[in-house]
Length: 104
Image (cartoon, rainbow, N blue to C red; front, top):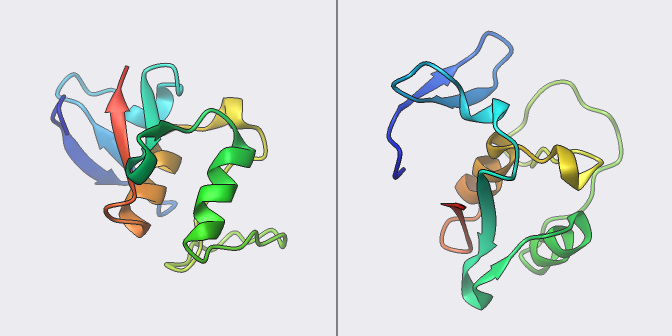
């Protein structure tokens, strides 16, 4: 990570990147960071585009509301405007080499 920090696991099981100043990256909106599909150097600008890229790598939309996290699921909001860095890093970690998060 370019800005540095520490990964913190909250009690609800969510992982956040906490900066030296103490703020967590999940509180910053997608305006500060962007998710990029590396093979095409394409910035994900919509949920539809992201789902299409994920689908190409074998991911399928799961419609049942699950509260428990699973290693085989990627958490995405229903509205792309609510995409946070924790969602982005979830995509990156589960699709190494295909996605990256960049600072804007």
